[in-house]
Image (tube, rainbow, N blue to C red; front, top):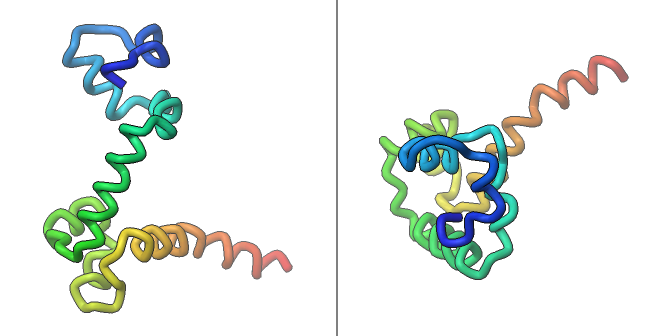
Length: 104
């Protein structure tokens, strides 16, 4: 985003520290314009490869994915990126399954 600011520069205002924060945490999802860039694809592939190595620091998982921490620690959830994503999606959808059954 920094090397090609055309998709966000007019939307994020302030000093460099503020713009840095907004690029990372803003409600405005400007990153969507960059996902197809070769550099972004390479970075995601590198992240997935690192995560799929199985060396997930449990304190980090506990901080950002607390509901996955015990499943990862016990070995009930494989330590791959895809498995964790699937687990989180399934967990997020559980309330909707219950609501759907109640109204059937």
